[in-house]
Every structure is written in C-alpha cells, then in structure tokens.
Length: 249
Ligand SMILES: NC(=O)c1ccc[n+]([C@@H]2O[C@H](COP(=O)([O-])OP(=O)(O)OC[C@H]3O[C@@H](n4cnc5c(N)ncnc54)[C@H](O)[C@@H]3O)[C@@H](O)[C@H]2O)c1
Image 1 (cartoon, rainbow, N blue to C red):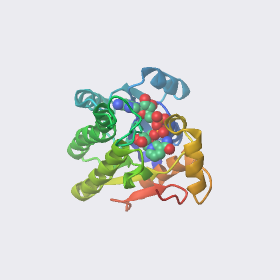
Image 2 (image 1 turned 45 degrees about the horizontal axis):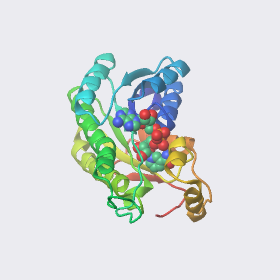
Image 3 (image 1 turned 30 degrees about the vertical axis):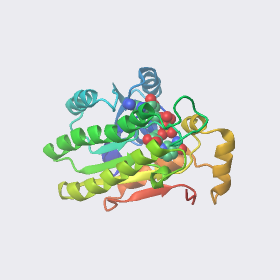
Image 4 (image 1 turned 90 degrees about the vertical axis):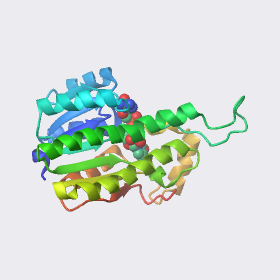
C-alpha cells in the first residue's frame, strides 16, 4: 500500500513517536485518526494539522476502546493501518533492599504497565481487526515493542509487556494473513524523546549510549521511517524490525 492509500489509527498520538507519525503521514496524504487520553495534547495536534481526526481514549479501558473504535469506523470505514503506539515506561527492580517498608516490586506499578502496554494493544487490535475483516479492509497492524522485550535490568513489567506484544504480533501475523492483514513489531532502542529523558537518569542514559555501537541515541524520525517502510512493504509480515543503532541489552 502507498502512504496516500493509508487510513491510519495511531494510539498515543499526543506526543513522541505517535505525534510525529500523525503529522508525517498526514502531510504525505494519509488519513489519520489520532487517539490519546491527553485531551490537551490532542488539541495541540489538531492545531498543527486540522485534517487529523482526534479521539480521546484510554487504551487500557476496553469500554473506552470499543466506543472509540465504533466512532472511528463511522467517520472513516476504510481504516487499513493500526499503529499500537501508546505506552508507558516505568522502571523498578524486582527487589530493592533500600525500599521501605516493602522491598518488592510494586504490584500496582506492574498492573499499570501491563494494563496500558499489553492489555491496551489487545483491546485495540481485537476491535479494529474485527471491523477490518467485516469491511474487507486489507492492511497492517504495527505494534511498538522495545529493545527491552529481550529482558532489561530494572524493567520487569515493561520488558514483560513488550515481550507479550511481540508474541501477540507474531500470532496475529499467522492468524490474519488469510484476510490480507499483516502484523509487525517495531522495536526501538534508546531514542531521543522526552519520555526517554523522563524515564532514565542522564548517567544511565550515557551508559547506554556508550554501549551503542553508533554512540548516540536514535532520532524520532528514524522510528517513523521504519513505520513508513512497514506500511509500504506488503510482503513484510510477522517480524520485529529493530531500530537500535546496533545495541544489544
Ligand atoms: N522513546 C523511546 O526511546 C522508546 C524506545 C522503545 C520503545 N518505545 C515505545 O514507543 C511508544 C511511544 O513512546 P514515546 O517515547 O513516544 O512515548 P511518549 O510518552 O512521548 O508518548 C506516549 C503517548 O501515549 C499516551 N498514552 C499513555 N498512556 C495512554 C493510555 N492509557 N491511553 C491512551 N494514550 C496513552 C500519552 O499521553 C502520550 O501522548 C511506547 O509504546 C514506548 O514503549 C519508546
């Protein structure tokens, strides 16, 4: 499919990768439906490009997701690309002996991360794909994973959620191929975003940069270009595309 034939739903489109993708693909002539739970961020996006349709939605709520997906398909029934991008990064070791009174990884933090990063992808994809199949829309599901899916120190919940995303994506690539729907993951390494700087201390980030063969963080546009490639290459399916400068965790 060419970008001008694409009608995309992008989750977490209020900032970072999601916002850049929404603006980039809209400028190239795609139809973009942008989702986020941050209403102010969606207003700013709309101000930058009024042709982008915006929808408030918390992807960790299945009720919200079902309502919004119905609404989007009423507005544009030709949706053929879903980018599951919304995600949160929260770090904690499994056991922190300095943490009182409980040294164990918080169950609440575990649930927060799994609810958004894993359940959100499941809720969105089951609703959108069901409609795509009924409308006979062929296309692609693109899931944002991470280099952490391989298991990264201090990221039990985040790593688990992204490994689950990769497993779901692989499963869907097998189940949905006969409907002409592909499923692919993009796994960025450390990218120069506000989210990365918020989630990691600068000292820790410098260590990761030293370990990266290209000795730098990636840029948002380099992830957006990977998404562009996946949309346009109709034979790319069931894989994880790594965008990490050669870093191995
Ligand atoms: N930035 C990186 O270096 C990096 C690396 C690897 C993977 N990723 C993944 O890429 C994706 C985007 O990352 P980013 O750095 O652009 O993040 P970001 O924090 O800049 O943006 C995430 C967006 O998602 C929205 N969001 C969060 N929870 C939501 C929810 N429950 N419902 C709806 N919207 C919600 C936020 O409001 C925000 O607009 C995430 O899945 C992240 O795990 C990022």
